[in-house]
Image (cartoon, rainbow, N blue to C red; front, side, top):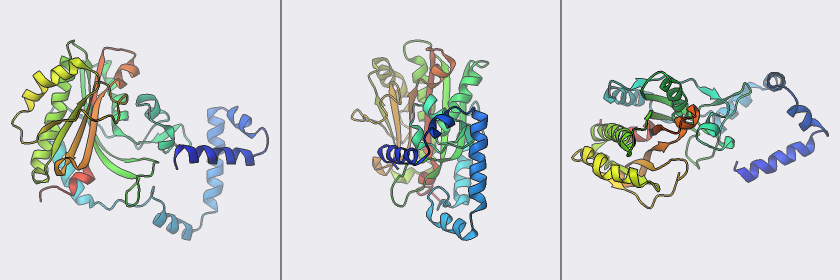
Amino acid sequence: MDGDELAGAERRVWAAMPAGTRAALAGLSGADLRTLLLAVARDRAAAVRPSEVVRRWREDRFVRPSGADPRVLARLEARMWQLLPADVSGVELSPVVPVGTCSAVARGGQNRIVTTMRASEVLSDPTNALAVEAAVRRRRQSEVHLAAVHRVLRAQDFGAGTSAHFRLFALVSSARDTGSGDTQARLLTRHLTYWRTVLAELAPDAAPQLHVTTFDDDVVRERLADTVRPALDGGGVPLVDEPERTRARGYYTGCALRITLLGGDLEIGDGGLTDWTARLNGDAKERCLVSCLATERLADHVVP
């Protein structure tokens, strides 16, 4: 359901409710509203028959199992963990995060998030959650590098034959700016080197590529040329400039990344510099780089 459809449905529902209902609900405390919603859910669940559960299991894209082989994914992700540098901390994220995490951290639309009744939302992007954890750790650590793998759930419809849930292997790094784009260059080199290593070992025959786009940041553009590119030379996975990219401008700040297979035709990962930890900690000097890869897409092309 897109934004216009959702707005239309919302107007229809409120129009069918008794006068004053919206104001009354808006006036409830958070605890009282949760109590009301939980009571409604309990009553609705009590009326559900087993046949309806089976029907929903077949038809609801939110609950249908993934078609991926978990044994293949387990082996793939285990090797990806092994390839991580020793100073990257692994994080086992909760299935839910505080409500508003996506919209507050990454300015994502809440309509694309599965919101719960308990002031939380189903995790839709591990990079958002890792950025919050990185901001917390940055208060006691000089530099933070985190990784997580998580099955995420998103409310938007990705089209026929696609799943609403999928696994992402995510990296988030946060450190203080040292000037001249050096911090951004160092973080970019770390992430790109890792993804290059993963692709070169696990999918060398699938024509893997790393792509980079700069968004109106001359300093980052210079560091890509004189620092990042030389560090990645000779790795077997090309770093391709993608100046025509406009997607995620504003979501990412200064620089965006893409990870692809089949010569750029199949996107399996994304990332970029963000201001997330800067806003979370109220410190404009914070620098944050996020990146992630869809392991189920990679698994289809992994060398046996």
